[in-house]
Length: 266
View (cartoon, rainbow, N blue to C red):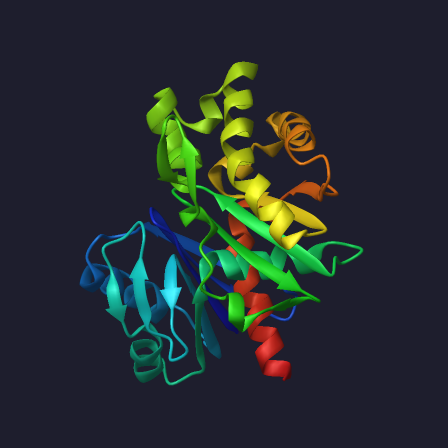
């Protein structure tokens, strides 16, 4: 079975996929801050599984071609040889990719008709994203970090995720997105997200943008507000279709499955 691991900044999900293409036996644990503690808990969850044919793990950071996690923006992890460690322990094929890129692979290829160029954005602890061209994750864009775009906001230059991520919104409003009740709050969310999008959209001109993550899960509360904002800010550029993630909290897990089946078939 294909074993999928979604490593988030706050929690880790582990699941297996069979021929039916749906996750089974999903388990979770809080993401430890120390790499040793993370690996210990991950091994415990993987050791409890049967029939591990391959492992795909999505991590919240930059990964090199050898499967080493070089660094994370929201976790103090550096130079973790994730692929080597898992391969040596389980003796199966192991693939390591950025979590948002895997989610992008799942969400964009799920759309019908499939866009030639689609962008996925996860708005959660930080802001991550992935570009899918003709149904494929492009190696040249594997380390792109849209949340690190620097923008002028509230009188100073900041990274986009410093003022528009779920963590930033919680700090600003004193509550999480699921507790927002006023239109003024969602209007503020739309405004903050539009700042980065009005840079990305003219540059890439994607056909569709899919929103996921903890804030993206509430897309229906700010979709019209965001669309109106973008229409006003980018009148010359065709506005892409804006969509909510289909798999919501399991987008990375489904991306792991899609990634594995693509590599196995090739």
